[in-house]
Image 1 (tube, one colour):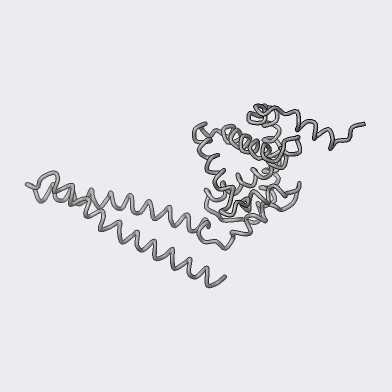
Image 2 (image 1 turned 135 degrees about the vertical axis):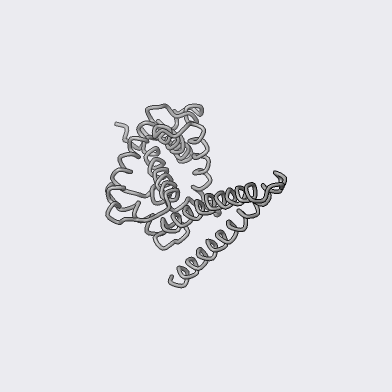
Length: 230
């Protein structure tokens, strides 16, 4: 009787090149279903840890982790190493579209994840490697996030500070420009439209530039303290 390993090898040998490049829907669905189960279980395990990361970093890390999970799962379905990794990217893209992300955005996101999945030395990114080596009901996602707990650049606090700073610069700059244009128009008639607009833009810049510099100073100060503490 042919053992399982031999059967798997036969399956790999019989996969046509075109089919390997365009995996069937059932295979992708199986990868997605497996990834969703792992994701739900891992998110439940880290819920009590109250990680505070920037939303973009959190989503990116989870997606790279799931890439590793689906890569390993695809190999168990009989794909060779290279095709299994590509199949995982296809499944991840389809998964994002199922989660209501527009197709073009999903394609761009997948290409971005492809770049982020490899380091400069051609090794897999940490989240991908840990996702690939993960086992059911382990704490592998927490293991990924624990590496970045003290990294100020991906912290939720820094992201909120950055987001508030952008809003202050945008709305503050627009408000100052509007007030200056209104004041000149009302109390200093006779100026040309270009002169009034220029005054408004200069006033906005006078407000925005110091706010930006203060934000940069706060960032570097916090980063310096974090590095000294570590």
